[in-house]
Length: 167
Length: 461
Image (cartoon, rainbow over all chains, first blue to last red; front, side):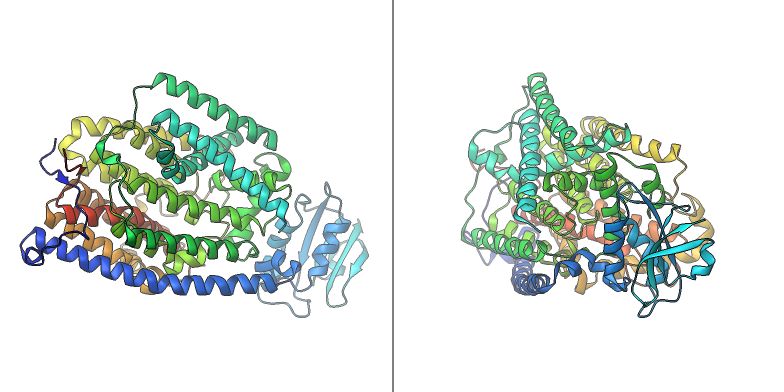
């Protein structure tokens, strides 16, 4: 058995206050008491704050509609949720698509053009993105640059269109 | 969010608990049902690690991923546990320090606060949207790809961000989708609530017999209500799962250094392997744990070092197949741009990196005073005469800070001056591991400082 084994001792029992000033064990115990007071006080204060904030979060989440919950982070870059819902409804699950983004979307944020492709990749799965896909989600793109006859299936009138292309 | 999805998650987590209990029975056993109940959080985390590691290896080996595959995997793991139990029947819950002790009024009160907090966390998580950037950009899409295509789909795992990040979490999330019946990214947050409960239960269960409730309760509560922990631990990404696995592994290694119980090191090895398959930082964290244990185990080095070497080797072996998988496919991003030694060509980054790490670790708005309390615990334990525990903690904390500094120093794509915005600087997420590990180490250190030694023995001994 190692020399440094000591019996179990409950900190709440039989505290000899004079012994708390003895070096080294008394001072160490005094330090433990101080640390536990800080820990307990901060723990209770931040417990109240955490439960309060979590309650607010729960209320805010419950007040959201299904679309907002499903898009969540995408709300910062998706301009019109209907476009992605239409894409999900119209493009076959084993089909391919491509997102062509451009600056021509009314209401776009600075995140829309660089990241709409990334968001659609997750949202439209199991549909696969492909460079030569027939289905195109035009997110403010220049239709003339698509290089074929773009047949619009759905559009919102604000620069977003979903359709197929015959090249 | 539907009742069906919630029930599905409940079944999945009961399944993980079952696998973990089988493993616990194999490597340790229990003396009573009360003891099993006390260790159920620990058993659950063992189940998470074991199933997560096995599913990750199956994905790498191209085993089709499906609900049936998950169930067969779990059943095989349970049967394997029975076989292991036969081989290692001499392993028993041995030490006297495992004897149950009264929780006490203060401990019970803090236990109640932890339970209330977890209930509030559940309410916040059950209808949460997928807001965290990394979660919707690649963690959850990878899980969806596994769910839809039954494996590591080449296209998605190549095109999604951070293709070299390991697959353990996506595999568990894909399992959740299968049990829920659909890729329900809203209810998925509840899976992370289970992880949080498992971690809190594991720390409490492992330490309850040796640390008084008046010490354990406040320490555990403080860590789980720290602003950053309470605010982000339900995000469906790997950061907090990594922290939980690492923290439990570090705690078990600390206990093993004191008790030399085989089950502690076996469990730690599995958890370290799981950590390495959760995020690439897991390699760094595991190296810190092993190095700290080697230093703290110096006095028993003939006993400790070979065993630590085997435990580390097993953990690394678990993580190697994934590295082979992505290396074979020329996926990049695992190592810093400057390479392991290229950081000496960027000496100007060293001090700002260290400053960035230190200021984040000591950021009250993120972590309260937990790192300061941990430092105080180390000093007090040394003063009181303990050696093994405070040495382990001191070296571990020191290596973690050095390791985080190395990350910022060597990843030269991170621009100077560093800002603490986690979108461009990973340091906030990294430092979480240092704080979460304190949930287990701080009560041990304070208890050692109070008793004046490392080890717990019974009065009658």
